[in-house]
Image (cartoon, rainbow, N blue to C red; front, side, top):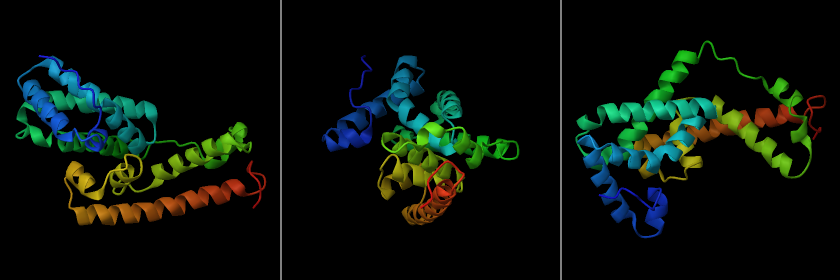
Length: 214
């Protein structure tokens, strides 16, 4: 049995009109993996590794930790996959395991995490202050820092909404939430993100902080 799947995500597949075929193949892979087929599980890993890693990296604000948590997530998936009652719910189940891994990490390191302050960051990143393409790099980094400060309660919905560009009904499905709750968390998360980002931008623009006064 071949386990190569050309379409690497449901959103792209749906736009191409082949979402149902891909979903059916994923269900078949999950079913085989539940029976201990390691090749089927490896195919699932290849299919979802990148988006789960991207999601977790944004959840914890660190690419390296995000990659480690991705590996932890898939180890748990392999361990508990036989107990998944419905293969059709695999993707949502996968995201919930990933989210729990992120929450565990954030809770464990909340008191010990030493973050680079904005002031030190600006002092050490002079190359980002040049007008042009570098300005966009700076803005993206500030946005990423702001996202890391958004409440972990709102962060999963916000990441899936902003970065993965998923509709709220899909986010609700993936995270096992009510769509009304997703709407509320996205709204509140966006409000927090804008406020935090604006504080970073205002701080950066002050004379002596490496930026230009507005």
